[in-house]
Image (tube, rainbow, N blue to C red; front, side, top):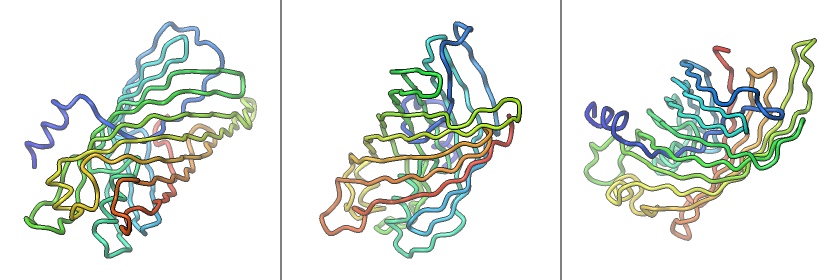
Length: 251
């Protein structure tokens, strides 16, 4: 397992994640380009419709922002599930795959390409690539398998709306929505071991994320994702909803 983690961190370059970074911008920046690096940035509590409760730490984030409002982020998340309310191991594993922050390790590149920038409204094209290390319970031999890698690609439309911005009273409130299509992929043997082949090796789906951010530190997010490439009568076809509450630990 240690060799897999080292390989994951230092060799793989293309990674997929659905996580949405919220960075509201107004007009053109004065700087031509800016790099920044932050660590232990935020903590996230997650509850999904499969009754899984998990906690996430944003371990680090490397940001690149240009004058024309092109933003790109390299982010590492780590998520641990503390409680699983369902006895269905396949559903619990799928919850981890579709959780935007899911995985013991979740490294992703997320780029926002501006389409329209106004004083109180932003419209951007979002592109994300990433890789996750998913811990799961095998349901098919060999049963001693406890983890696998999952890759996915996400393309969507991001709308950001300023509702309140009062610098004098140090108060702000922003709304966003992110509609997206995604591909998710793992080795065929992993689909057999962890899903009994109910999920294709390469599967597609769609998702929606809406949320509000208060004072640039507190976020509430409602997320829904649905996999399309499953057997007709499979429980994996259901939409998985997730409520996430995030607090920025360091500003």
